[in-house]
Length: 80
Image (cartoon, rainbow, N blue to C red; front, side, top):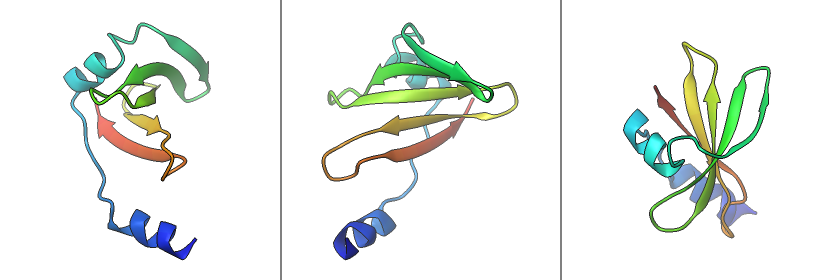
């Protein structure tokens, strides 16, 4: 667990442009669900890693959440 926490501390936030998020989600074509704060869409990074992009309500930012074997859930934010 200690190694995992140290590795997480070394990671830096990544910001994506609106154009990149459109590309990753295939123009937000597959909606996975929605809630009070916005909708969640299925996406994929160019390297094949599957992601979920949360598009928050207006005047907020989108979040990219993806899962990997090393890091179960990572949230990356970017403004639209």
